[in-house]
Image 1 (cartoon, helix red, strand yellow):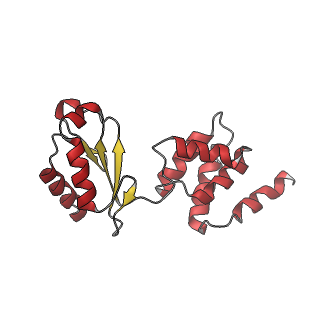
Image 2 (cartoon, rainbow, N blue to C red):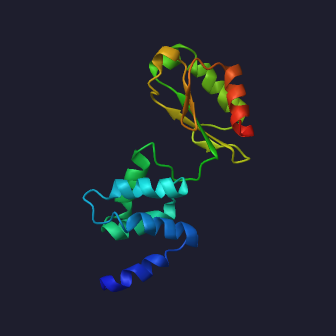
Length: 171
């Protein structure tokens, strides 16, 4: 197929809403000629949409002349990339050794029970996504939790509840 017809074909990729398709194309175009363009494109898509939709994989693969498996492999390998939409708030609990020794296992169980989700899941109301992280660099204040990029140390089940309630209420 001649290259001149490829953009029209890309625009008709099924499964993506028009605004999501536009965001993916906007991520691809300024980066496609860069060496190692895949990671910058994936980061740009996730920054724009909050995740990398499965239906974006063929668009990206086609633009970079990669297989869908190549693109999917990178998305699934890196924990940073999400293939499903996340909640409005991201709660990450550190699972490194120091945090586990200081109560992260109990905190993890409490968080899962309180939120009613497992790792990488989002609460029914779409407010909170729970994620494991393997070091937040706050070992002296274990167990550590990061909520929307804000680091909290010495988190107990009680302080976790307070932090999540404040986050949900917008405080």
